[in-house]
Image (tube, rainbow, N blue to C red; front, side):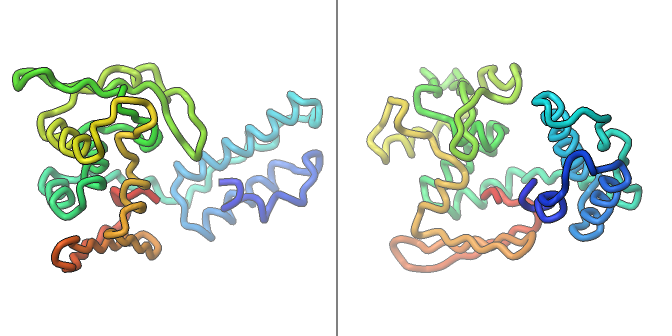
Length: 235
């Protein structure tokens, strides 16, 4: 967020010289240039405010925080409602993708875990069902984001997640295909890596459009699927 929206505007500014009016201009300029929603602009404002708060805590700034009185531009649009894929759409993706990628997509679709939690999953966090009358469980114990391992975002995130039969079958198939690992070195699969590391899958992104081309390993036939806005393959 700093590199994308703020660094060009802020990097040559002295903290003691920044006033609320200047912060307001930054927010309005960013809103116009990138057509950002009020929610994203609020995140940018919070980041700026945190910078001044940290500077004050470290003794580099002793004035009033100029970001607090700045407002989110009224002309910025409200955040769009998130899109949830239907069971039919999920089924189409699972049929289209190779096993490793489809296991990652199934885990994301049927558990609702955050991307960082998906990246952090390991086989020892998964308790398979003992019989057809029981559900398996995934225990979310860590989050992996940009190479950093941390705790799940909230305490509720640490609760065991039920594994529906469709997901249990997919995980069993994938686990068998990679030698049935049971240690921490083998990830169940992350959305981004499971897809991008598969040579039969090509992902092209143009603005908010994601085009996924999958080559059948046996026939060489290529299938293409297009997603508008958020896609199941990350950013």
